[in-house]
Image (cartoon, rainbow, N blue to C red):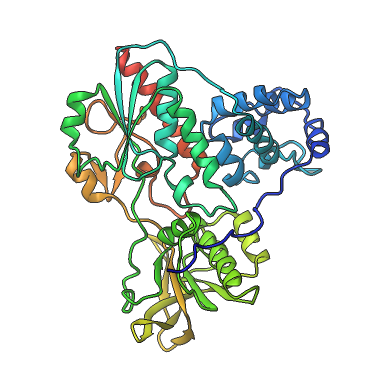
Amino acid sequence: MAAPVPSLGEPFHRPLTHLEVKLEANRCLYCYDAPCMNACPTHIDVASFIAKIAAGNLAGSARVIMDANPMGASCARVCPTDQLCEGACVYRKDDTPIRIGDLQRYAVDAAMRDGTRLFEAGAPTGHTVAIVGGGPAGLSAARDLRRMGHAVTIFEAREMLGGLNTYGIVPFRLPIETALWEAEQVVELGAEVRTNVRVGRDLAMDALLAEYDAVVLACGMGGVPQIGIPGEDLAGVWDALEFIEQAKLGRDVGALGSRIAVIGAGNTAIDALTCSRRIARQASGGGEARVTMYYRRGERQMSAYGFEYDFAKQEGIEFRFFCAPARILGEGGRVKAIEFVRTRLETSEGGEAAVPVSGTEFVEPIDTVVRAIGQSRLVETFDRLGIAHDGGVVRVDESLQTTRPGVYAAGDCIFAKGTREAMVVEAAEQGKRAARSIDTYLRGGA
C-alpha cells in the first residue's frame, strides 16, 4: 500500500506577528455606522472585536466574532473579505483597508489554542429540534437553538461534522482541526450527534416529525456530477470533492503524473488545481507538474473568488479558457489524453451560453482529470422527504420554512442556481435565521 499523502506545504494565510496585530488593530477608526459590519452577511461587530484586540482582550474579541458567526474561525480563512468587510472599509478608497480577516483569525485562533469556552446553553424549554446535516448551516442553527434552550439532535451522513469545511476545502486554506473545533463548540453546548445516518434513506421525515417539534434541513448538495462525455469511467478521472477529501485526510491518491487537467472554474476547481499541483510536486521530489484549468467560458465568467484565482496563478497554475472537453481518451484503462473543442459565447434570453465551434477540436496529453463543475442536487432525497423543490433547490418562505409545516431549510440546499458559489458565511447566517424562526414557531409566535 502506498504511503499517505504528506503535508501539502505552506498555509495560504501567514499568521500575523504580535507587532503587526497591534499596528493593524490601532488603525481602526471604530466607525459609528460601520460599513464593514453591514457588509458582513452575519453582521459581526468588527469595530468591537478589533477594539478588544487592541486592548489585549482576545477572549472577548473571539466571543464577539463567534456570537455573530458560528463559523467565524472558518470564515476568517475562506471568506472573500475583499468583497465583504474589507471591501467596505472606509480606508479602501485612499489607503489599504484594515486587515479584518487576518485580525479575526488571530483572535479566534487564540481562543482555539487556549481552550476558551465562549458560550453556555440556555435554560431548557422542553422543545426538541432535529438538524439534518452537520455542515456550516446545520451547526449554526444547532448552536443558536442550544443557546435558546431547545434540545437539539444533529443527524449527519458522514463520520465527522463540519460538512465541506471538514471534507471539501484544502488543508492549507482550512485545516481540518479548525472545522472540527467549530463543531465541538456546538457539541459542548449539549447537542446530540448521530453520525452515519442519512435522513430520507435510513430515517423518514415522518419519523422525525413524530419525534421532534421542528426540523432543519441543512443537507447541502451532492457530489460533482458527470460531465457527460465518453471516457469518464477511466482510471485517473476524479470527482474534485472526493479528491480533496482524500488529500485532506492524508489518504493515498495514487500517481497523478505530471499533466493534470481540472475541468471547471469555481472555488472547488481552484482547490483541486492547487492541491494536485502540490501533491504532484512532492511526489516527484520537487519536479514541475503541469496543472491546467480548462473552462468552457471566459475569465470574466469564472465563479471563483478573485483572491482564489490570484493564489492559483501564484502557484503556477495554467488557465485555458473557451474550450470544453469532448471526450477523454485512454490506454490500458487509464487516462491518456483529452479531446477539447473551442467554444464561443452566444447571448440569448436565457443568458450567455458556451457553444462549441465546429472544426476546432484539439487533443492534450493528460495523466489525471479532475471534474469540478459544481455539485449535484439532492432531488431524490427531497422527493422522498415530501419537500417541494425546484430541481433540487428547496422552496422556503421568508422565515426559511419549507412547504411542510415545522420543517425549515438553510444552506446550500436553498441556494438558487446562478453564476457564483455560495459562501460559508451565508450558510452560517441562514442557520441563524432558521434558529430564530424556529424559536418563534416553538414559542407560539407567528
